[in-house]
Length: 293
Image (cartoon, rainbow, N blue to C red; front, side, top):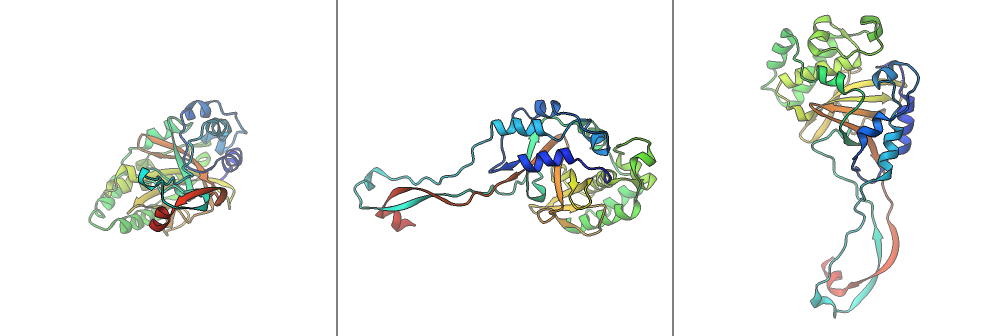
């Protein structure tokens, strides 16, 4: 996953998904399935020879959910005779709150989809258990606080697994190994690290809905990448094969997420666009309203 770029995916993703709020994706599955193919590479193997969502983005762009732009003041009938003043009416873009049930990582908006080219690979490893030594280690952490469990699991897998490319280890461009297989072999690439970490975190007591596998593009190394993400006290933390430190997923700007998975759920990702305040009209406001401001 770390050696070849999803350039088609990221060009479409970064150019097309500037969102005022998370849209409703009614036909995401059809749009993904219609995407055009791109050159054979690790990224092509990952996405099943489909391009990076340009048809999906076009479909989403056709029917975005309308953002809430106005805060409308209501005036009771008893107030209509009160003296009024004229003040500018202002539109302000309102940023949506961080979701507690989806992976809004790297300042993105996660949008649920019913299917992705990676669905089969994910479901084959989604609920796999770690091997016996790793399971015992994870079970020993259950009485520790959540952040300590994240640190311990991240360090454990990073130290036990050595990076080996899928082509060298398995003779194929992309293979997602079950956690027990990766831990027993002690070898894997980035998604294998992430899958193993998720399995250990489940064994250490984390709820499935707080754990995510995120497929992303590394903008610095110009490579495709996979990371484990976990939610603790409403905040998303990144467990990366490249560092033993936990990273705040809202502050990691080097990655652009493409797909995320958790249990039976999957998402693609877009971005919010902040709207500057705009004075558009003069609106009458009563003295009663002014006094309440």
